[in-house]
Length: 150
Image 1 (cartoon, one colour):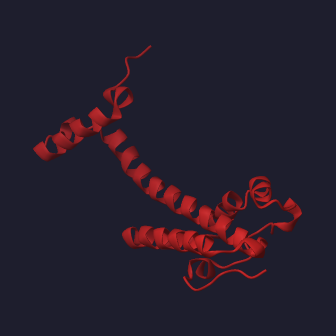
Image 2 (cartoon, rainbow, N blue to C red):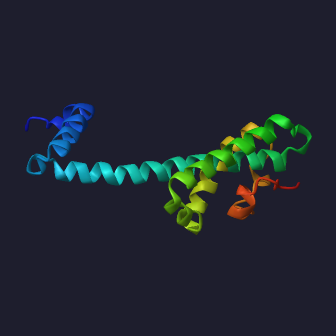
Image 3 (cartoon, rainbow, N blue to C red):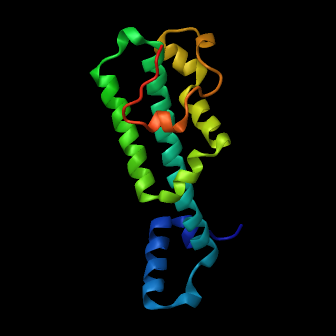
């Protein structure tokens, strides 16, 4: 069995070493393959953060739509905070805006946010009452003045 690499043993130490090598201009000593993987993972992490925020927003909007009797200021504030967090993410990483236009991505965000079993249990409604696909546009969901109706 091969001895684990520094990358496999302790990624934090590995990252510090790679940064020191870069700063020292010792480019031939860099672990190029793992550096490339880590750079790609940064982009994936940003995408995961966006889909996670979008899924939470979708859940909150569904609750707003499906439970009009429970609507209140705390729900409105939660929706507003998710929208702000998404906008901050998009401002920091403008290239993610393209992701919002991807219908497959939106379907994944919907599936996560409208997880039928979890959402139905949380809202104490039958899962047949939840839409199978997202009934709202991304622009609506991110519009600070928009809320779904019953």
